[in-house]
Length: 293
Image (spheres, rainbow, N blue to C red):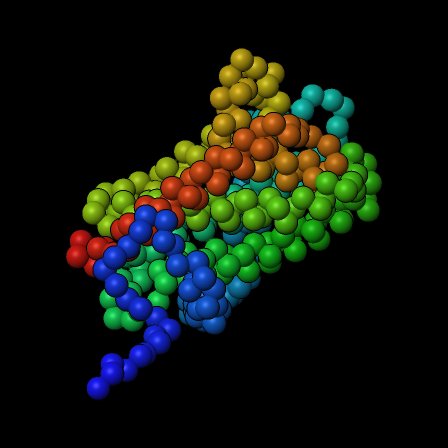
């Protein structure tokens, strides 16, 4: 009797190559990604009185605090480059805050991928990359709400006049900047999630590390504070991959500021490198994480 030939859609095996990331299979699970996005966004605001309004309230309150403390009291510069540019401090801080809110939100959530989904991952098979991808997309919904709020204030100050805000073709780069933030944050997050399966202490340091990273980025102050005071260390400061993203975002929105193509391309190289390292590490850990988590 000849053996029956069977074609299986999914084959689970112990053999695993370093760069076998199951990207095609992950795309086939796009319906599950959509389901996880709905789950994550709903769970984020579940049993809250204001619901999704918190996506507006949080960056709005943070912007007000930054405007009062760093703008009015500390009088830190809100200029990314020297010149007679007039920019409302409120818009300056809000632009940085909504970008950082998305970046830090994705990184923080992705860094707990294995811990938060261990119950599901231990019982049901699906490509593990579904979880960080759905996290980035669910956080993108909150970013969309915050960006819409920013556009309302942006339009108000622009129509009011008295500022140096200009609408330029650089606005077209905004989607690319959002994509870069997603790539960088997911890459950093899955690296941390891979390590925290064995070393839980690192999970405790994520929040503290994000705070240090925030103040090491031009969110509470303008780039000119660095370029004017310590110009010799400017290149080192720009190696922070989130820095060119923030300054380019402001340059695109306001029509002036600091934009250096070389530093921006370097930030893309760093972001992609971190993302690839994260994918390889993630792919390696996902095989054995249930034994150590």
